[in-house]
Image (cartoon, rainbow, N blue to C red):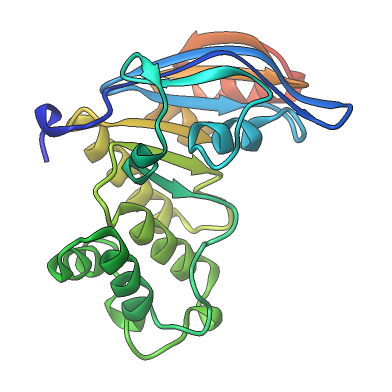
Length: 234
């Protein structure tokens, strides 16, 4: 896939607010991303980061405001152009990696050769067809979940704490995938408490505090990002 073949090249949140009953999770969020952007979303626990990703993925509707794709209100059929790596692996624990990815590829209308390429690319071979996903280690399961997110060759990646619990080798693999995605003009949003990961991958950093954007900056050093997270603000 090349930049010219992407379906989604611009993503924007326009004055988005999300309420859970009386509790305000997000307030008046406006944010834009364009081809090649990797947006880091940082903030303390409860800041609204995962809610923001859920709205971007169209799995959750905002209480007010709008999600725009390519300058128009988001349409449900474009949900398939998003690859999601969340806290939950979103795989069937009783099925093998092969079975999980083959089912998802079939649902997406994707050729089986894509599954084979992902098996090699994400180093799944040692446990691909002989173990159910429910017995895999954290690192193995995260690689399977990433493969699932990539099956449909998405235009937009949404990554929620992608390096949580992973060793350095597995984290480096995620970095490579995001770099490759950016190089073809894809867009990524990444929630992370890992200053090194944010500093190495993100072109912009957005800070959330209690559901509000309290600052937006270009990339900084890992130490600067760590201080932002410690203070809870930019």
